[in-house]
Figure (tube, rainbow, N blue to C red):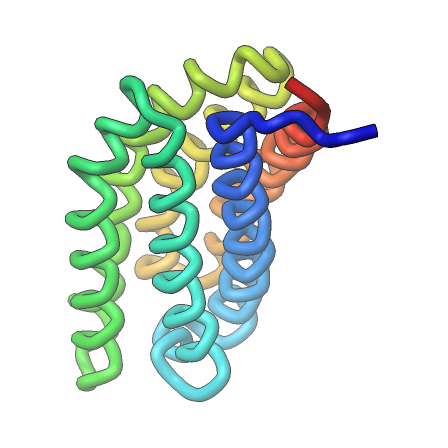
Length: 180
């Protein structure tokens, strides 16, 4: 059986798959912040994880942009700002200012949530449950992420949001993987 050509669906699936990979790395980084403090995120293998997230963000953004419509437009407008701000945050953290770098990364996640609403709306065509879990996880993650700088044990809160988001993404990817 020949696979049908569904570029919009395939782009959405690819972006969602990249988002799942990013969510797994985020979960690992949050656990590292919980165990050792958020400052360690700017060192060694954890820094490599942060840089990998930026690269995955570019790939996911490119895929979601190709979906078109409101989602593609919002990604085109905000993804460069989000990724640029996060990249600057990583650099500032590496230069020895983890609080400022972390703050810039948190702001970038708040801006990324502005992409979440059209992504949620688009995702409902594949699964209402997956879309609701995704947006609930994104919002909970974004709201609780700043707490890490107050107390690293608070990293468990955004970790919960990340896990909920990941479950939603897995549901969405499984539904989008089908035919047209």
